[in-house]
Each structure stands twice: as structure tokens, then as C-alpha cells.
Image (cartoon, rainbow, N blue to C red; front, side, top):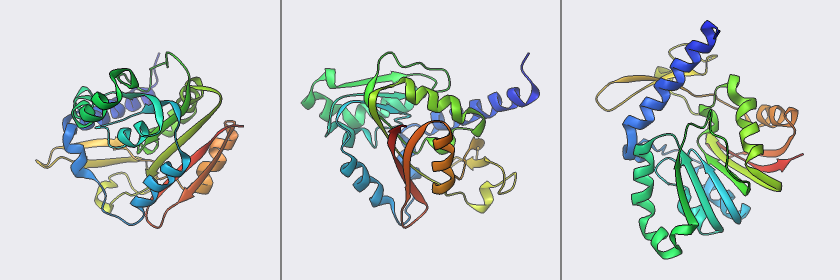
Length: 225
């Protein structure tokens, strides 16, 4: 029987999912105009995500186009059909040019989805901070299940949270965000710090280097130990 904590976490994740479904293509308007953002794209370019790539929480496809420049094929997964529709529209020209077989969009709940194959690279941009610490280990098990032997992982994220979002105080990973019409939603936003995150991943059997940018962003790259 689920505990009250499990039930509350389920409600929180449902609210988070509803928030991003409601944002849809408008998610692009939520971008942070903060120092260090350009460093993330540069780091991914240097990483060169070649081969078969799995993108988790692709959203409206902001990163997918960059992945397609290097990959032989990309499977992009997101829980929101609205986000996937925005991604399909955004990537229509690239998909037509590269061939339909090179891009596959999949709607799935990343907290229950199981990869149907293994990939050379697993990528996720601005998703890790939305994974509750209670689901951190199981999420990284999903990443491992999606990687070939010797496969690599790359992620980018930020630890940015405004004071008015901290409805449960700075020690809590539950924050509140509002739509333009003022509708409030609770979501998860874990403020990972690079050194702490490296150690947490090392304990799970990952050899990942996490680097900070000039602003609140960070990125990580590595593989299974």
C-alpha cells in the first residue's frame, strides 16, 4: 500500500506534468536570459553526440536539432503531447531533409518508460533538476538501460530558483511557478551543485564530470564506471 509520502510525490509529479502540458510551445518563452547559457551549446558541440542518440524530456525540440547535426538517428521522448507537437513543427524541415528514419518522437512518462533498444548516447537538457531525489537512482537506471556498452551520457541544467518560487523554503525541492494568467503549479526543482552531483553519480556507478558555467547553469558528460 502506498505511503502518504508516495501519494504526495505522485500528486506533485502529476502537477508538474500538467504544468508543462499547459505551457506547450510557450515553453520557449520561459528561457532564462542569464550568463553562461551559450557555454552549454558549445560543450555539447565539443562532446559530439554521434551514432544513435536517445533524448529524454525533449520538450519542444530546442536541443534536438543540434543532436541531429551529429547523430545517425535520434529518438526523442517526452511525456507531453503538446511539447511533442511543438517539436515536430520545429523540426519538420530538418526531418524532411534528413529522412524520417533519422528522427522518432515518442510520448511516454519518463518515470515508468523502458527503452526499447540501446543507444550510443543518452542526452537530456533541463530535465535532471525536475527529477525528485526519491527517483534519482531509478532515473539513472533508466539511463543505463538505454546505453550500449561504452555508451556516453550528456546533460545540461541549471540550479536557478527565484525567491518567490520557494514556497516551502530553500531547503525544499518543491517550488511554485505560475502561468501568464496567474495559475499556480507546484513542480520539482532540485538545485544540484556540480561537486555534490558528481559524488552522487559516482555512488551509483557513473564516471561523470560535472562543470559549472559562468552563470547558474551546469553540464555533465561521462559514462558508466
